[in-house]
Amino acid sequence: MRRLSRRARYLILRLAGPYMSWGLPSRNDNRPTHDFPTKSALCGILSSAMDMYDEITMEALRAMQVVFFKVKGGELHEDYQTVGVFKPVPYGKKDEKVPAREGMVPVCQNRCDKKNEEIPDGEDAELGGRKSGRIKKTPQRTAVTYRQYLTGANFLVMIEASPDFVDRCIEALTHPKNGLWLGRECCIPSCSILEEVFDDEDDAVAYLESHGVKNGETEFEADVKNVDKATGSLLDSPVRFCAFDGYRRRPVQRGIWRG
Image (cartoon, rainbow, N blue to C red; front, side):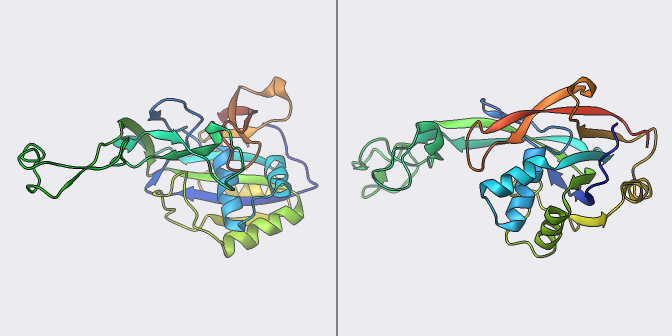
């Protein structure tokens, strides 16, 4: 693994909780989780804590170099869910034209395709309801989906960024403006996300190795600038906030930590 630049500060975070889910882009009804936190999820945590969603913040988030350490991998859990189908609707100003994919919102299961109609006497016995006076609602198609979570996992994160941006992250994580989740809103952290900050890389590495990162044993996944050193890539570097398909591929290096 490459040595990080010394013209930066090093922020240590801990992502631990009973449930977490680090989804990668998916176009089907199944939502798998990556076995490491994704950079897009980390960007979401930090921007939510700052309550900042502008392009300048996005540029700073994309520029930070990240290393994820798997202190405890946890177990894979798959949850069965049913959700309403998605339907394109316009949003914003009435005269604003929005591409259908950017206007996708969930449709409630009991929403009608046509006007509500009263159920005649005798018909609703089949529906298990009261006689007469009920309003018949035609449900939309319900999608069956399987969503994966990691249970009991524990990750340490080392972020290399400019001193000013690290200071912003520290302030935001100490006094977050919004709730912080581990991938999904139902996944609550079990401890403070903010762990430590260092001016020197060697001090940051020493801290990691004294708090669960074992030399020769712990798996890591890291950003790499030199594509030749990459062992793979992930489509998880966000281009802009609140946009479908707004991701770039990020070259990553995976392996066992050697200090």
